[in-house]
Structure formats: structure tokens, C-alpha cells
Image 1 (tube, rainbow over the protein chains, first blue to last red):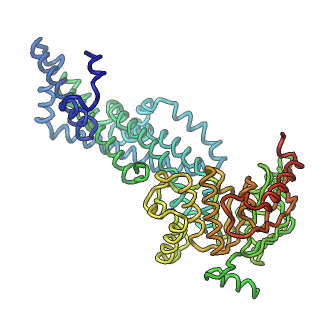
Image 2 (image 1 turned 135 degrees about the horizontal axis):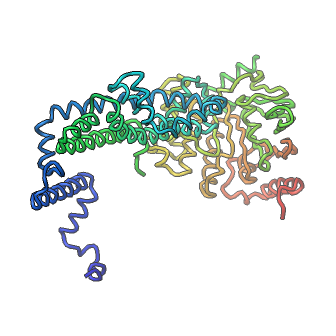
Image 3 (image 1 turned 60 degrees about the horizontal axis):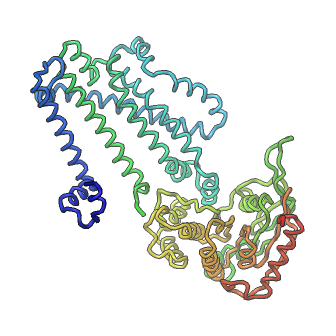
Length: 275
Length: 274
């Protein structure tokens, strides 16, 4: 069978296989195939759960938790928005502090020697440990969760931005100086865009850390958001709501990763231009 | 003073000599201080006339690049005096275009936008510079490459864009630090010819750094041979060959004589160990 498939030239493949192959290689096609696969998996889950009569409090059926997503959409949506705002706040704070700090560290070697041990220590420390301390300081609420998100995404952005600013070729400064560029122009026209690919790869890691961290942060330190909602559902043994929260959290993560890809495409069109 | 104003008036026109002069006396460069100081260059003298094409050739570490950075005011002198167009140089020269071995184009700008950066930062007239950019793209064989990003261009094309960027604001001086060093031999010969033709038309002062004897003899009015530790000029060779010079320089018996002369200097210096 496999021998036969191997000996069959590409052009003589059946039209169905050919079309499926085409479908797989296009973006819309891969999205459709992905959705089909998920639907099949959920269908299997639904069928098995019904077949073996699994109790709802142990493992809910897809129809249960997807149903909750629909029936409780206002409550779940509200928490999803709270979570998203927390991510945006923490992440924006991370970018706004990490990028200028990276520039300063790259420009002033003494600053690097002085700050690097502190940065390494803070980076290596598990960030959630600081949660209880922040709760003492600020009380339980989304602010503490945002601060934890900030700590989580701050370091990857800082480290990548630093290497980005350092990687700018010295001869590029020479060129900018022969043009008579002032400090401001040399930053906006040369340094920042040249460091952008590095900053972006840091921001991409930062977003992943942020959407991961936000849920944990909300478990321990918030009274709003999907993490808080799942904890509460757990207290009430409302397992279908917990699963609905899981799906909602995945959707939020998907949204932020997608937003980063779009931002990258808009801000750095050159990185996508083909040959 | 009179001559200064005359030269700068010419530099905007299309006349035969539009370059600046460079006069250096006993310039040196030392990096660092105290026992760790490294004496990189000099003392050397330079006397480059307006519109002259001068090459610096020598083994690695002989201070060629340092000479170029000093002559453009990008690095301060450790001692000596340096005058451009009769005026002492106190800050980075701006009437200058600079090309390095790597194209150093900005990935995030198209070829044209890279060139137009000169206009943006200098605040020059957009329409005038755009016209000059298009002219240079034509002359440098870059027709239709305006909207391409650097990574969409070949190595030779990128270096051509880099040359266009260095010339678009009509500077009086062109500084080139091994500009063809990273290109293949065929591209190098072609781009050498294109540069010569452009130079014949505009007559900017060119300070050209190279490792290649063929490039030095093929392009220059004068070749300065340098030696290491510390970098200094040990020989000056006037190249008296008709222009434009051919692709195959071996056509001239004089070429072989010039090349032979430089080789023998290198041999004396122990640059080659055969």
C-alpha cells in the first residue's frame, strides 16, 4: 500500500487528496482543519461521557461547559475583560519601564555593572512569592495582579531590549553623525527601529508570560478576573464553570498572541517582506 | 578665505571640481590612557586636493580606518592639525558621504527611504533630493529597486544603495572603507567601474580604503601605502593611467608595474609570508 503510494507520481494523486493538501497549505484552510479537529475531539468527548454516564461534578460534557459559556456570557465576559485589562496594564507598565531602562543600561556601562546583579536576582526569584507582600501593601484587588503580571513580563522585555540596543552597529552612529543627526533623531531614526526586532521578540515572550501569569496572580491576589472566577467556582464545586473559565482563558491568550502578531506586522512591515 | 567660498559655491553646481581638500599635519591617534594606551596611528601627513581620488592601502591594523575616521572628524585627533577646505575640523564633517564594508542600511526602510534619510535628517528639499535619488538609482543600476527592502536585494545591490545614500545630498567628500570588500569579484569589477564613471562626472574628493591592489590602482589618482604598528604612510604612488580604466587592468603594462611596486613594498614589510 505504502509502496504503491510512493511510486505514484504527485500529478496522479486523486483530486480529493490534492485539494486537501492545498487546503492545508492555505491559512484559511489550516484554520478550517484545526476547527474540524477540535470539533471531532469535543464530539468524541461528548459521546464517551454520555456512553459511560460520567457524572457532571467529575467531568462535564462539552455541551455543559460550552453551554455555560453561552448562558453565563455576561458574567464570564466581565471577568475575561477584567483579566484582559490586568494583562494590558501589567504588560504596558513592563514595556514602558523595560525599554527606557534597557536603553539607559546599554548606554551607560556603569549602570549595567551596578544594576545587573539586582536584575538577575529579581528575575530568578519566583514572581508569585511577592504576591502576599503586595497584598499586605495594596490589599486584594486587580492592582496586585497587574503588578505580578508586570514583574513576569518585565524581564524578558528588558533582556531582549538590552541586547537589541547593544547590537546596533557603531558604524551606524558614524553615519548618523555625518548626517548631523541629533541625539533624538539618532534614537528615533536609527537606534529604536534597529533594536525593534529584539524588543519585539522580548515582547512576544512577555505576552506569553503575562497571560500565563495573570491567572495565577488572580488565584492568589484578586477579586476579579477569570482566575478569581475559577477559584470561586472551585469552592462551589461548579466544575462546568471551571471548564468554561479554562476555555475563556484560552480565548484571551489567543487574542493577545494574535494582537502581538498583528502589531508586529503593522510596526515592522520589513520583517515580513518576501524575497 | 576666498578659495573656501569658491569651493563651496562649486560644490552645489555641476562643474568639474566639486570636492573638498584635506590637509593633515602630524596627526596621531591613541586609544585609551596610561599603560593600556594603544598607539594606533601616526604621525601622518595628508595633502588631498579637491576632487582627488586617493586610496589608502595596507595590511590589517595599519590604521586605514582610523585615518578615515579622523579625516571625517568622527573621532577626535590625539595630536596634530587637520584642515578641511582650509578650516580646522572641530566636529564631525557633514558635507560628507560615508560607505563601509557592510552596507549598514536600515532593514526597516525601503531602499529609497534609506537614501531619503539624508534628506529627512538634514532637512533638505524633498523634491530635489528625490530627483537626485532617482538619478543615482539609474546610474548605479538600481532601477526599480526603490520600493524594495534591503533583505530583498543582493549584496551588490545593497552596497549600491549604500553608495547612493552617501552621494544623494551632493557632499564634497566621499569616504569609503573597503566598500567592495564583501562582494564577489565580478560584482566588484562592475561596481568599481560604475563608481569611477560617477566620480568622473562629479569629481568629489574620495578617500578610499582597500586591501585590494587592483582596486587601488584601478580607481585612484594616488595610492598611499601604509604600514603597521603604529600605522604610518610609507610610500606614495601616483597612478598615471587613462580614464575610464578597463575591466581588465592587465591591458596596461603600466598597471603591472604599479601593482608590482605595491607588492614589493608589501614583501619588504613582511605582509606576505610565502
